[in-house]
Image (tube, rainbow, N blue to C red; front, side):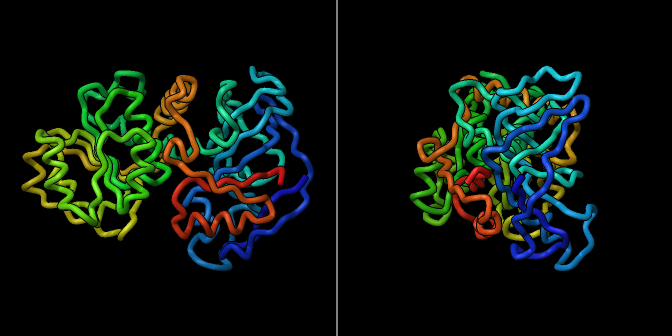
Length: 340
């Protein structure tokens, strides 16, 4: 089978198209014929590691955590059957085999059935972005661990950077759960994408006093902030949060150093929490998967321009270009067509 692999850390040039044997599933595992592989920032960051030429944990690594495809063979003790369409998550976490290959073997729980109306491109767009968004939305006081319709009724969510993949998933999941959603964007085209995803209000922080406008839209403050750039947005977040709010930080766009005034925030009883899917509690992962599956079945999670998430598809041999597209901040979701 064809696969993209690398044997040393470094830039996109270390990714090579190779031939590998088709793997066999063991007990509790399924083999999936991969159709689409989803690319996330952590995929190219893991490949670069601490610098070029660094030793790898495995002799050869196939990148990419997310994907979609069809179950090809099931090991003993599994309930999935050949022919079932599935979406994949965390394929490459602490493993050598990600989704940038024609077949991948995974524990059954990491292959989630897709309903008939959900396309395989949507399936490959879920995984890390949607699980990250779910975790960010379920960290507040009084919020259930798993989102359902109405779970966020009466709450206001601010999504910083609503045109990104995580921001898009956060908007869609928050709307599905009944929240009022405000999002910040940097341009009119990005505002259109955030609105298509379902944001009630968009705030262009380059054209307006974002804090003042958000406070006008939400006089009592926002209950949850889904934060992509904590260092750059710390002052804005402090200005708009309600008491007992949660600022869920899932990335470090704009810098690593985050300074917060303790005295001011003590009185707010606010929570500032960091989020990384790979190391979050196992129960939180399973709750996210269950909620995402339900939202997809309800048609509440979608992908494509109409849902505010343009798709950019590369052939398998151009996986290096796909990684670079993500690194350069391409707006939307970058996928690899493994069959092309």
